[in-house]
Length: 333
Ligand code: 1CP
Image 1 (spheres, rainbow, N blue to C red):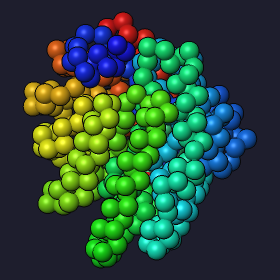
Image 2: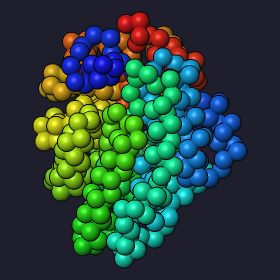
Image 3: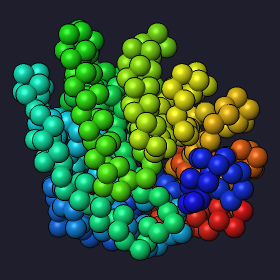
Image 4: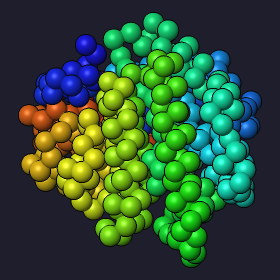
């Protein structure tokens, strides 16, 4: 069994495996070389030769226990024919949302549009570098995708004023998302993904009273679906105030915590495997501080099944040397 599955399934508490969110991306010079020549981000994700190469880049440098496929959560609205563009220094920008248009998409069209993503997963899964490691497929949670589809760009701190105005539209989109997220998950697994992570990056924007409708019910549905396929599922509800409630209701195979939660209280309250937590900004400081902060997490979770990771993605300005130091330190612990 791979180190990651030992932790998630067998609840092993020694030798924490490690991988990092956004490990395949902006901070690696070899990625920037490719990115420079491929200005259209969506096309880059749809180039199975390049996206599989980018996925493997961090595994060539560091002794990581998993690769995460180089793609994006917004490939899903793209697959539903909503226009998605990534603008430099602005982030994603989505086109108009036409319910009639997206209601017409069928399964075959959708799979065909995203086919290169699945071929890329297949290529990575057949590479020697992934032997005895996991290949992580992922999706955005329904709520976070709804946010981008209606808001059209990153909400940063808040949603557009009339976000919840059209209840009919929201409910229809959630139904469509459920169907296509399941297809997207299923295709990733069939192509070779051995773990699924669900990113709910904007769960923290909701008030407690709205969580059941937009987060708990739709996410539980997906989690149960992944489990029915016998694949572990890790959830990352960034910014939720009550991780324990979330875990009690959704029961993911493991929970990724963000850097604002207190790891001591998480360790006490939550009895499923935990992943992540370290503030990615710590990688921008020095090795002494990095060691101290990483040790904090390793010590707190030393008797708990724990996958080392960050509390959000690796920042673009991170020095690859710092990542190297961190991975070696976790391996030597
Ligand atoms: O300009 C560039 O080079 C593109 C930067 C980039 C990259 C490398 C984007 C744009 N997406 C990605 C890849 C990506 N995105 C991966 C695979 C690589 C890896 O993890 O190693 C994954 C898992 C994601 C997931 C993703 N995309 C999330 C969830 C995780 C998170 O960061 O909260 C979200 C919210 C997105 C949307 C997105 N994609 C890209 C941007 C700039 C954004 C917007 C972020 C925001 O709204 O602030």
